[in-house]
Length: 344
Image (tube, rainbow, N blue to C red; front, side, top):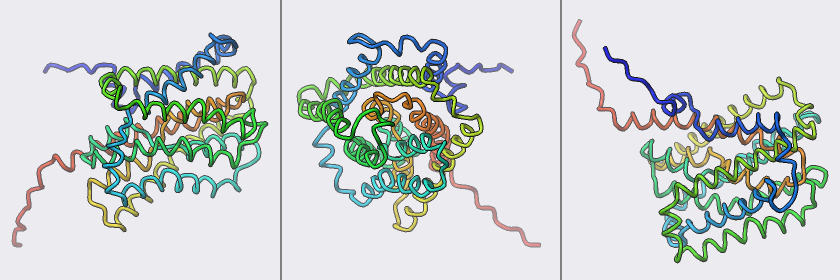
């Protein structure tokens, strides 16, 4: 019998990994072994290039965002409110609830986890997973897009409650100014140019996605270079890292089951329920990484802050992809044959 060999990409997908995640892990190792390039300063340094790339990421995002599609998607307002409430209210409140239990030596890890909780939902992977599970794709596109836009405003507001000059490396007014210049202004410029260049941006969406990933990888590398050089990770034990991974797993499933219960209570249809579950439980590593460049630009602790985001990103890919496959099989599978019971 002829055996079929699986490609490396297929094997990685089967265990919930992808090339981008492996690249992230590789650059963390590289930052540990060779932090020098990430510590350099100057207009052509990696840190400066990451700053330029950050603004371009949000500019291209605004360029792909259609104001007309956002207006047309407002009709399903109940579903949209549930998704955004899960993203920007449920997640942060869950993390605020455990803050009194966090010991002082783990405050940075909690801050990173709370930063994760304050982030918007993903765009591309949410839509892909909703499509795979046969959910409401237009609603997924709308919620992912509006979530990313709202996150530009809401995430910094949540973080302003806990960021101090010794953690972020700057005062709150400086953060607001940098967000306005590096994040908000590029988004608004991109949206204003959508009617002219939106078609071009959609045509080259795949290439722009690779650009996004390149910027993320650069920011991750430089952040971890500063963290390793500042010996920030010396205060972390293996037990804390294991506990963090368990916390990320628990956070995902707590939110997922709460949203499942809410969907049943309000009587959402199957397609809407899938959109709520997938869009409401996911977090954007793109926004988390690029906005950390503004919020924690001068802090050696940026690497620790990014650690929960990368863990949650890997876990959500693993869990949601398997759940989506199972939901797809429920639709595709033929109805079970009803057996007539035999008389005894």
